[in-house]
Image: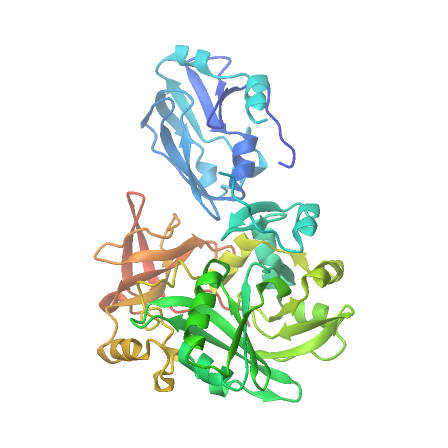
Length: 131
Length: 360
């Protein structure tokens, strides 16, 4: 994706992650990394899929994403249990660069503490942190 | 305290080409432009141009230039040829007395008693001090720092020679040869060397001429390529990177560079190198491919001893590759390795070098 974008329907974490709360089921969220994160990383060449069933905790790393040059932790914006992983990333991790808010989603999580979302930022506030 | 990074003569050209700049050994250098994958492929399939002006140059001249270089460099410097159309190029390492590697270097003979040695940016000052310290024993040899007088471009890929030839006043020197040419109207030293496993040349020219030359080469189809692609390209063909695969802690025999060490020349460290060669090294630098997913990185430990010195995802092969120091008994091609990649054990196999070879 060539140009920076921060969709309004997402919640953002300062460590450059997003969460999309399922409109039908507010205890379910899809997580990914932001345009800024993928642009800083450069071309993603490997995403090590976490295990379904794993518990993740807000503000702590739950996965790793690797570009040619470096490996970076992915920080959980919310706590919960991983119920689905984006298996397509095993063979096509470049989706994280090409479509970070769509095909490049990372995991779906059953939220443990839905109230945690109050601590996340909206698109405007997140974009403001990027200067 | 803010650190002042040095900039090459091509800094503005990099920004104009959309480069992402990073600190590399005290220099502000382009790590990538369009993207490392595209730049890597441009070099494998066509032509890429790299600004490597951060690399240093040391000129050694005078009647004792050869004797001094023979003392310093591991290779047999007397074998660098010179004829009417330029001189030879030679790879060597610079060793301490204990055989530890200070740097790896290309030396070009530019006149009968005049040699230019290209250093790694991070090592330039230390190399220069080392050269000057030993020059005290050779009063008829003069050592001069030339880092400010040269910009350096590497033009690499199957189309590289054609593109450079089009702006040259005479045929380009062959592989492992160097000669003065006029390129795009100004004098340059053109060297048939590189760091990518592709054909091509490296060009040393005055910094004030680098911009014009860069523009001419890009206009004729050379793709600007950054340090990230330079690293993936060199790793696929198993060229050493100082600081990763070469360090003070290990010698050239361990690194598989015995071929460029001619101990009979009596270079500093020759005795130590000779002893390791005779006894056989305890560790060897091997190339590996990861068997399955994952990418090993520098410093990842290997089960049973040893560690990864360089690692990346190979754009050409589509697998994790790298080089590692392993106990000599496990260095044979085909040996299985278990690499601890941040707590996950990844299986890898020792492979023949180079890891990447051009198809027929």
